Image (cartoon, rainbow, N blue to C red; front, top):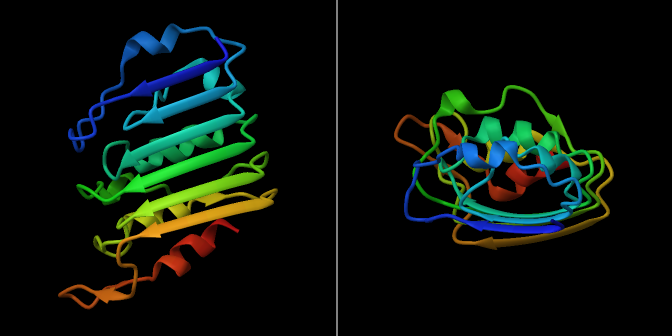
Length: 169
């Protein structure tokens, strides 16, 4: 198996399920993977993937688990990440440390109106501030929606998208 595509129901916000069926799959030749609204966190073959296309809604995949598992993908050369707004993730599940993805040379980000504030940090800032790509050579960013500074009722500032994404360098 060299290529794998898994698509889940995108309307099930926050209904992420760890399908245990994938945990035992042995696919040492897996190089290309596309996951839509699902990320098989315990698939051992993820370490071999060189090209990953991942799309999900915020809170569909816990951000801390997503970041931790992306950092385990030591062969990853190209990451295409699509993030859609949706239910807000649990702020207690935000990553506590930065994760390095040293082999990623091409990063394509598509962010669809995901910069809405939640407590002290927006979900996109939580995601981008936890990922670091030291070998990045090619960056393609598509923003869809309104991304600007906003203040909630308590006066907490949600940084602009440019400031959120700046954390990855």
